[in-house]
Amino acid sequence: MVRRHILGIFLGVASAMLATGCSQIVDAYNDLFEQITQKSPSGSKALRAWRCQPVKNEDMTHVVRKNETLSEIAQCYKTQWYDIANRNRIQDPKQLQVGQKLIIPSRNWSKTREVQADAKEAKAAQRARLPYVKPPTRKQSGINWCWPTQGKVTRKFNPKGAGKKGIAIGGKIGQHVLSSAAGEVVYSGEGLTGYGKLIIVQHKRDFLTAYAHNDALLVREGDRVAVGQVIAYMGKTAAKSPQLHFEVRYKGNPVNPLKYLPKR
Image (tube, rainbow, N blue to C red; front, side, top):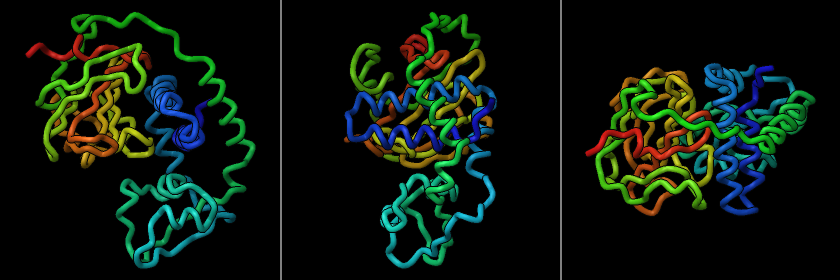
């Protein structure tokens, strides 16, 4: 059964893990790839369906006042800021408008049988990781690859190291970030601590690419992008310096991006 609350569950798992260490935050990040991989190609539709649910009777509304932040509003209602952001399709939590009406998801709604059942499935997915499948070579992939941005590789791929499973490319604020291959945007947002503004693109034959720490996102979930298309501007959200964190995944598992990007 296609779950309607993929993103909500994922964000809830990530929030619960924040107090227990970086490695588990990375596990939550991996869960997002697994959800997308398992639901491909309907993953983006499921995310949009969750965000576009009609207002229910038990939902409350809040009118934004001057100088209020999403975090403060969430504390008042004893909920999480990202739940409010996703319920109202807010891409940038810092851009609230005075007088803006927000739907506050009720705690009762978040504890329905359907959500509880989905949470159990999410935990089961954590225990049963996607099996490793040897990825095809660049030539075998049948995909036209390009570099996602210009700059020096400041961190190489390390499959056994702690932290992110990709490469870092240094650059400047506002520098163009390109889609490394043609595909469909299946995630565009900043719901995960440590990755800033993040885009994930799905390509044919079970490939995904991820682009993190952007300053601005130029595409939305469901958009089709061409190879070399500008999809974001480089930033340093959740990073110490301007850079692009770039990943390539095959069937949900991280692979070395340098094996697919053209030599330069």
